[in-house]
Amino acid sequence: MTKETRVALITGAGRNIGRAVALSLAGMGFDVVINGSADHVAAEAVAAEARELGGRASVAMGDVGDREGCLKVAGLAMAQYGRVDVLVNNAALRPQHKFLDITEADWRRVMGVDLEAAVWLSQACLPGMIERGWGRIVNFTGMNAIHGYAGRAPVSVAKHGLWGLTKSMGKEFGPAGITVNAISPGPIAADDEGDNPTAYRQAMVARVPVGRMGLPREVAAVVRLLASEDGAFINGQMLAVNGGAET
Image (cartoon, rainbow, N blue to C red; front, top):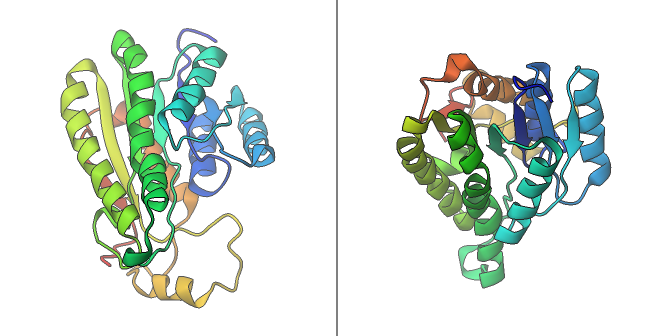
């Protein structure tokens, strides 16, 4: 790795937004580390796509739902490239649970993946960023960080917490040359979205003023900005990529 090459670690990067982010950053010249929790084949396929763009790419499989898993994933990235300059906390769970049916295990699992993973991964990657005087952390919140939704109490709590974490870290680490921001995507089409969306997806589109689902690459474009030198003055913000949707 040349001195100028920067490294990006993207969690949940085997498909959809995570995949688009990995490929976008690879296209910028970053070496990318693709994290997935179960589908190793999908993660390797994304890494292969990234290599076709001219950079280096590797896979760091691991469940980021607890501190040990996060340290494992960060450790694999460090072992492969010696550094992480851009951390994208994209992995998330969005289960539906009636509030009175939520178990302690349900609650802890969502908190682990949707909120606490950003804490432990950031703690693992920040020392090197501080030493180099440059870093980018991007957290994915979503509409759950803006509105509370029935049936998604754990997700809404976790994503609100992630927004608070973003603001706090942006203030603490901005002086060290590290920006911390959040992206709140609206309804985004999945990689395997067909021409016949479900009634639920159609209802989501009806709430979007631009009249369509967003594309993963449109979200990735915002990560690309935040990871670039042009994004250096954006810090502690939550950027909505939702076509103008309010609910």
